[in-house]
Length: 206
Image 1 (tube, helix red, strand yellow):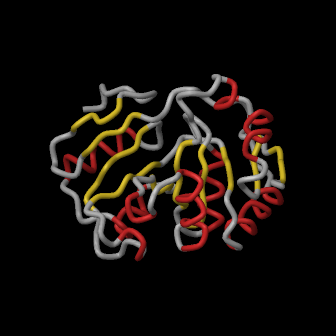
Image 2 (cartoon, rainbow, N blue to C red; image 1 turned 45 degrees about the vertical axis):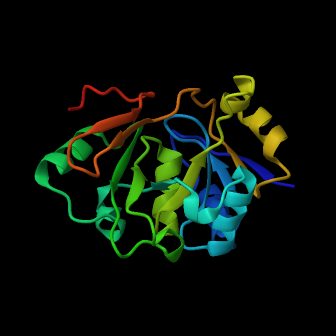
Image 3 (tube, one colour; image 1 turned 180 degrees about the horizontal axis):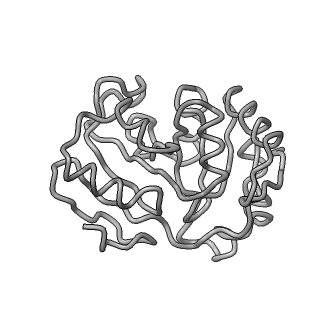
C-alpha cells in the first residue's frame, strides 16, 4: 500500500522531499503534482520502475511516449540534439510552464528509449515537481494519470487519487488540488512548431 504524504507547494519540506527521493531511488513509483494534472513518475535511470509504469499503462516500454520532467533547460543537452536559436527562444518563453515540447533526441537517451527519434520535455511551473527533480539529480519519466472515463475528481483531488492508486504505486503526494487540463503538446522536432494537443498552455508563445 502506498504512503500518502502532504507537501506544501509554497515551501516544499526538505525532509518530505528526501522521502520521495528514497522511494524513487529504490525503483518506486510516485504520483506527484504538476502545473497541470497529477503525474505518475519514476527515476529515468531505473529500468524496473519504467517497466512497472508500462505495465500499469498497458503498453510496451519501447513504445511509450512519456515526458522527461526536468528542473530547468540545463538538462536539455543530456537528451536532446543541438537545437537552433529560434527553437530555444520558444522554450525560454514558455518554460517553466504547462507545456510538453517534442524535441529531437540524441544518442545519450536511456537504453529503453534508444530507438526513439524524439523525446517529450516538460519543465512544470510547480515547486514540488522542481524540488523532486533537483534533489534526485536527474529527470523523472512521467505520464499523466488523467483518465478520460473517470469522474473529474479523480484527476484533481489527491485523496481520491490515493484511494484509486494506493495499491499500484509506492507514494502519493498531496500537493493540493490539481488541474483537470493536461499540458499543451508542441512538436518542435522538425523546426516549425506543430501543436499536437491544445491543453492548458497558451499557443500565443510563437
